[in-house]
Image 1 (cartoon, rainbow, N blue to C red):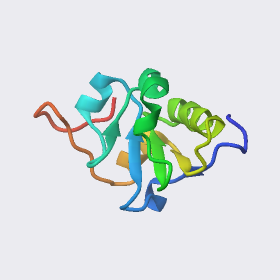
Image 2: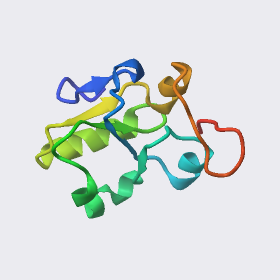
Image 3: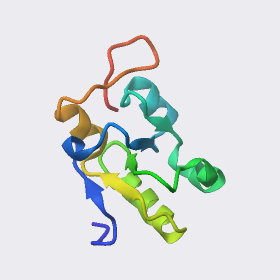
Image 4: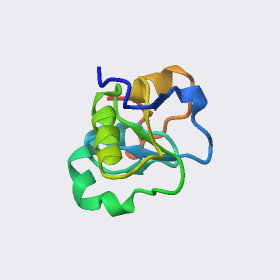
Amino acid sequence: MFGPQVPSVTPSQVEASAYLLDVREPDEWTAGHAPGAHHMPMMEVPARIAEIPNDSEVVVVCRSGGRSGQVVSYLMGNGWDNVRNLDGGMQAWAGDGRDVVSENGQPPRVL
């Protein structure tokens, strides 16, 4: 879909030390996200790019991998060579049995 220039990882390949960058919308984040992830909606990335580490592994995640793939391409075009797309997004993360937490007191779910 995005071509070979967008490196990706599966949920099981994500290291515990990776910086998880969740680029979904606030309602998606609130409903369920990976513990320890950092929230930055996709449209805020250009204005907040300096907050994204460029010296350690960054795994970008959305619901299914489309938006995060675009963000990985954008970051790579701006000099980041440490970014990977989470293949299958939060749907794959949850499907792989990885932990998901919510911010609203409800059982976590992936929107």
